[in-house]
Length: 556
Image (cartoon, rainbow, N blue to C red):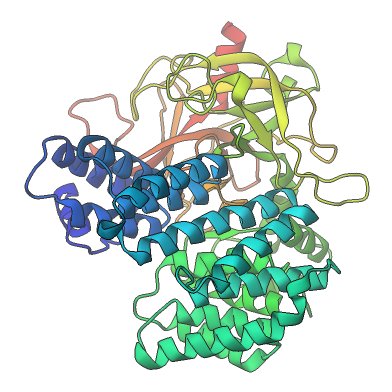
């Protein structure tokens, strides 16, 4: 195992260490200390590259911590401010990101020679992206038109235009307007813009054959022009690129689903869906998760009763039988994302019937999440009056996606977090908050809680569904082994199932898709669940058992 110091050194030297989230968190502690002590080992160029690498590999929460600390101690830097803004946008803190970018532009304008045109292009482009994300969240015609206007204005700006980035987004949004029969005066320019941006991307490839961003740009432009072979060729070239990192394919996949209405599991769904399926298959080679949109879950649910459908789409997913996939799909509706007032996605939680936890609560659905996610008492948690929950599979009577924000009305029970791996009495420090909602999704029935803990025999599995990094629903597919249980008190369960920031509060399922625990932490140096000293450590995730939560509720 690489020492944390070695991982931190690689990050400082602009190398990606290719280790788990836990290990990146360990390295951050060292980087944090170097920044606070103003060590000569870490200077401005190092912080810029660290933030860039963290964003490239979806560690947005750590980007925010690094950038905030550096800027607080050392003062303004436009590039670090930009990386912070990118992290905020990717976590869907759109209003906060917009305010931050405008402040950055204002400060940068006063020291313009020090900044240069490049940073202004980037910052103005991020303002356009915020407009686009507002449309993605709310799906209103006026917001689509606003986003088109912003990207076109920047594309046509000779001083600050980045023809590929701003142009391909203008093309995608105009194409969306065309598909939805929304009029816009620039639609007559669409073929011309497509040709212009293709020529620009090809020129970049000719000048810099190893440029990576020209490939997803070309793939999307060929999609817009209907050139299937060239679009797929661009994708295959992208997958083979030696410097490919998750942010590149993730950005294209998000664009295909959010703007082009792609569905990776839809047969004969058109070129955009075929491209999304190609990315999903490639992700299976390099990722431990699979991500689903509302439309994709609906498609897979219909395939559950069609012979061969699920086998085709999950043939390479280890440990996942067709029966397992069917059960998984049924559970997704009851898993929600905890969001703030500005729609920032901060954690996960799930619905269960109240009497599954406490008999007196009856059949009413209650929401379970971590105390460190929602609490009126913990300083870094979201207060109840500013917390909401959304469900990615929330539907109306006709089956359309609703996207409603449900408000919490009451805390029914709360228990603060304890230290990771700490063996405590069964009912103490459970890191759980149970809440009542003003209403619940019409199609949610609540998850089933297991009445017993699994047997740990080296082959027992634990699966996690959640919203890591503020994403749409993700399911952990691989390395899903349960490692150990707190046998003395049955309070903790340890597992290797991959998780990321944002999985806090996720339900932990057994192989029958019954909830056995609520996920709350992970570490590369998790104390093993043994009573005898000295402690031993391993890489593990930790959940608080449903058994312990029930015991605490009974006691209360």
